[in-house]
Length: 207
Image (cartoon, rainbow, N blue to C red; front, side, top):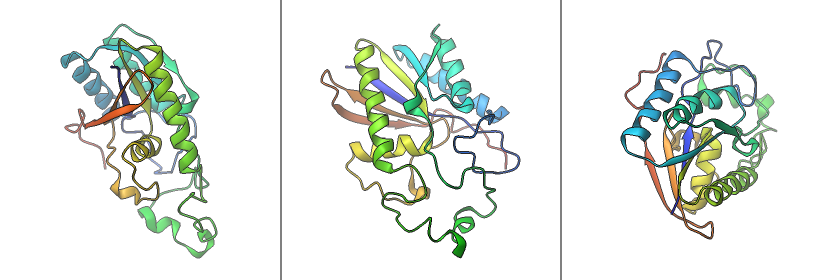
């Protein structure tokens, strides 16, 4: 039974503290590169039978995938379905966390947290992620596949598996930088178990 490892990208170089979303040219920081190397080392040390590495097209995901692929003598494939969720605040500066979004001028954007009204619907994110997961399992049934993606798409995929509400507080997501959320997927594409680990938890993130 293949295991599909969803890896969140590492820490990003973002000195202006903007919500980068799908914006281009946001690379990993030095800490982010160290995180990616830590994930690669953990997979190799644990003897994970990685047969394929696939990443979101965004730079930070590609850079996270590179050392993992190199550790197994593989190249990085790209899948658009692994991309970050789009949202209406993309490019906006983040100064005070959630407080930045509750100004009255933003209330219309916040009108429907179930969908949500400010960005890509959770349901659509989950559908594209699960399509990518099932295709990955079918493509390499005798090996594991690593899919490098982003926090929100990974989290909603897990919520669907665990039958949680897609409406959630972002602070409650169990999806740290460079964490691994892995699903066991059987022959008919059904996920049977989820596993979570943080192989880069020891890496210090700059303030």
